Image (cartoon, rainbow, N blue to C red; front, side):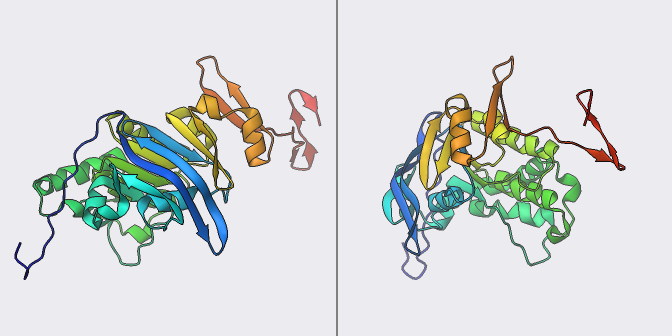
Amino acid sequence: MNILNPRRTHRPPVPPQPGDIVLELDGVGIEIDCRTILNRIDLDIRAGELLAIAGPNGAGKSTMLGAITGDVPVTSGSISLFGEPIAAWDATELAMRRSVLMQNVDVTFPFTVDDIVRMGRSPWEGTPDELDDDMIVASAMAMTESMSLAERVYTSLSGGERGRAAFSRVLAQAAPILLLDEPTAAMDVKHQEMLMRLGRDYAEAGCAVVVIVHALDAAAAWSDRVALLERGRIAALGTPEEVFTSARLSAVYQCPIEVLRRGDGSLVILPERPAVSRHVYGRRQTIHGKET
């Protein structure tokens, strides 16, 4: 290597096989301001699966994702990516291997949606994959129904439209691991389902998808496994049917929750709610055929 131009050669990723462990957390603990946020987290994340991370506010979900991305330093334990410590990879190598969508995507410059999505292709600059940039960007925007937004300034979009544009960027990055922090928060029902279905498709193509989600019914419908966090610990880990029981969810969320099984075996998860007396234009409304 020429010492006057010490340019590092980035190691391209090797596509994982379904079932391969691509991320592993071993006894991970995180303390911030003398407060324990995560406590001895053990978790493996495998290619070919969609892993949902659920739990109440303050359970440590976003902190755990920040640790996985390398943005939050761990106090104890270790995290490996493709069998090597996170620190073993440079920034470009990390971007080739995992794409990240955080809760808030702050953009202050007047970039168009097309500009934002193309940012996802930056890790592949100077590689043969760069030749496919236009096709991949167009495909990502088509999948998220964002083509009509391509020339719009990102900051002019609604919350849901921004979410779709940001998710398009993540897809355009074409990494074998997707890390998504509450990606459906600002979306309407149609686009929530679309995004979760795309995550499901991505996993079935052999990649690993980790998604933090508050909508328990969406997690039950689309995920292979669920990690349920409670006060910085994993309270349960397994299939949605194993993890999402009425007793466990009611205890973790400190709210009565019903888990119902439909005829096809899928789960319906609802908070227990009382019947409500409605007053429409000053008159009492009937509910279930009875006057209230």
